[in-house]
Image (cartoon, rainbow, N blue to C red; front, side, top):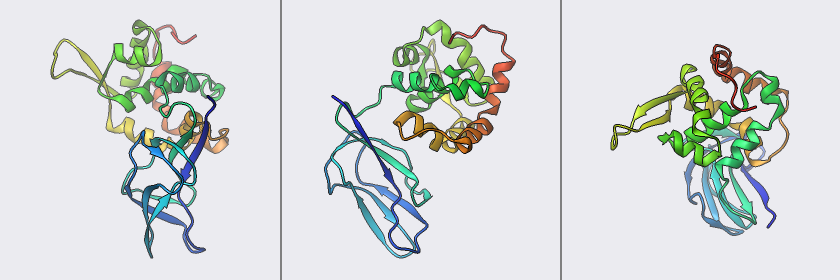
Length: 223
């Protein structure tokens, strides 16, 4: 079944409105959405109002967080009409790895997909990352090493099984993910092509990954 992706954006309620505060999500990720379903409460300087869906589908991702003040038109979430509501991380990884501009900027394609997977499911084992995105576990070692040297990912022992090592996103990694949200969401959700501004943002915030990758003498397992 084909899918149609509908972005949920910060509305413009009145000529003077330039931004709004995401006060609260009223729909959960994975919930079935119908036209008229209240999705999120938006607070402005004058009112607090519920934003309703205009389409039927599944709320696949809540991108913005409660308490964030965002400009009119900013991406808040994504509703998918038709097909599966969830986005398999393997598809996200493959989509990120296939973007030619990532390689053009000097990034190892796998780094961004792996970091996205860790940020989404942390703390997560190397085997679980492999199962999620379909990459051999031995190939992940070098990539996680790069992300760890860049300061975006850390390894920690599983509290319930000290023999297992888990990967988790660091505060710096989460900050980077937040700053690169708009361009990466364009790729993940098929919301349009990246422009020069998007590429500049990714280039700036992921510079430590490229530096760590250049210092790595391990063969690239992604090609």
